[in-house]
Length: 408
Ligand code: FAD
Image (cartoon, rainbow, N blue to C red):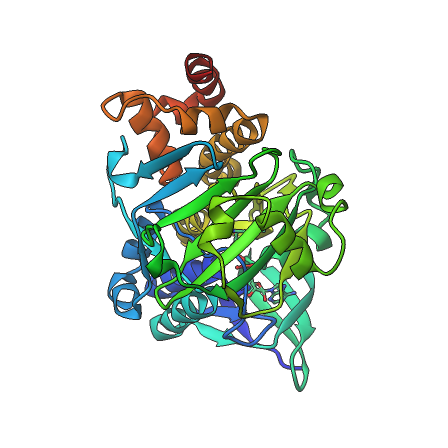
């Protein structure tokens, strides 16, 4: 059995785990990342929000990011075949970057993982974490590697295992999600969007023309390829026969604009499916562990908030963890969980309003560009969900209800 000791062990080398590891290694800690797969690996979640740039800048990642040649993104377009609306992130109320990238996650996650190694983290692939025990000194983390089992110790354990949800499963922290089960179908395509009326600098969100619970994303990459996907309630999905690919294209073909944009598009990977992805936990941290990114809570893909929340959770971890490792007592609820929850709760209110239809009505019939209310809503869509000067962060439901009444 392979046994090593670290200050911090991080489970998972996705955006949450890699960013936390970079920052902790930069603080001089001995950090190990245990990653189950080998990179590059596919994961869904390709459209970033401008708020995420703040966290990448803090980790010193901007030069690498700029050099990678990812697709620039400066806003979001919305269509339901009858109505069209364009959101420019530069219209936002909060300070901070107004643009970001759309990324193939194979490449983006590998870039972050390389940066973690360069910062000094010990990244080990094909390490499947299967059990965890806690004692006074920290945590014992055990599992299987390609050639041998491992049983490492660490002063602190970070679970960034995403959909693997290692600690929620092992510590029985899973709580019922606030959202019903929804199903996503997705693929990458080679497209001819450059010949068509399409702005590559924006994600296109299409609402199904007759069923507003169904929506599609079209996320262009820099290389003539795009990510396309649909989110569909299970009761709607069962109406479509055939394979996952048959279903995806049948639903796309019920739209006018998206169908036109994707005429002749060639599938580059088998259509993937993921169901019941919304998750929640009863506790986000304790004196010996913290849950980052999707291992904690995941709401819904509609506002592309997943990677931004993952980065924010990694950012919020650094200060309390460094203080604890330096001998201070940390209140993990007050110093980590609650500040993270502020933005997650804001996104939750927006997601609820989207599926209620209120936010769709606001987006398709928005207040004027000069109206601060519009700028405040754009701020949330740009990911600035922790800016307490924005009343949509602190009193989102009340403000969205008010605006929805005016836009109805
Ligand atoms: P992940 O990226 O999932 O990384 C977790 C890592 O942990 C993986 O590499 C995995 O191999 C590893 N792991 C798992 N189990 C173990 C184990 N037992 N031992 C060791 N390692 C393990 N987000 C966006 O920002 N923009 C989008 O456009 C977007 N679109 C989405 C569309 C859909 C349909 C869905 C479902 C989600 C979408 N998301 C999007 C969310 C995004 O996928 C996640 O929020 C994001 O990947 C979370 O990052 P993470 O680091 O927490 O986890």
